[in-house]
Length: 259
Image 1 (tube, rainbow, N blue to C red):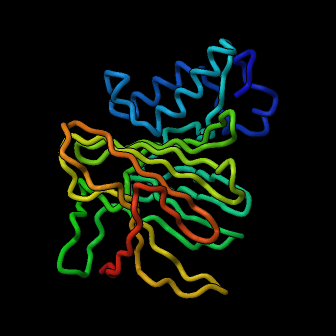
Image 2: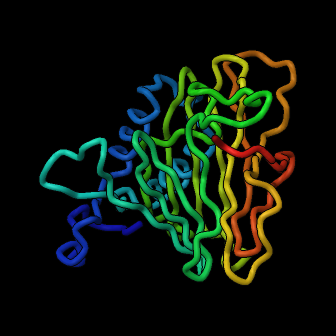
């Protein structure tokens, strides 16, 4: 975040993908991405965390601006083309790429891809699909992804929806651990979920033991009896050594092969 005039700095001429926006305009973009939610209490925690940080900075520096790294094109983006988004944390890289109608992501360590997200509702060669469906996809749906600069460094902000549910996520480099990314996710539910979580496929990497399971699912804690709508959150760490969940979330193998 850069205090001062909202005009773009000279670096914009060599980095045309840097867009400078007032805090209020960013809040409007987030609200629109979440489906024009009408009340602040409906903001998902992972999104609200970044917004509150920006608002706090704005109170200290009222004329502050910040920039979002996003595609800049003279033509309207088409559904089949979006520029990739990359978050770097030391040896670790998180690459977001457009996949048909949503963003998927891959995790790289030392330049090698070793985890990739499972998106949508893939066919599963098993007696049941564990509740995975187009409305309850294997991983949260993200249709808007931006790389922003915050007071503690770059962060990815992602939002999207499936069925009647809204998803949000913030991902940023861990402050206390090198080569590590903290992923914080949330889902605003209007009905009980058939499936909720983040699902990854481990990929073979030279010099490492073959993956023990086809997929790995990070699940939020089971819902207790509570009123709907409700917001469910979960978080985990991405590191060169693998994926580590943050309690009360849990991590479970998904030993079924996709068709």
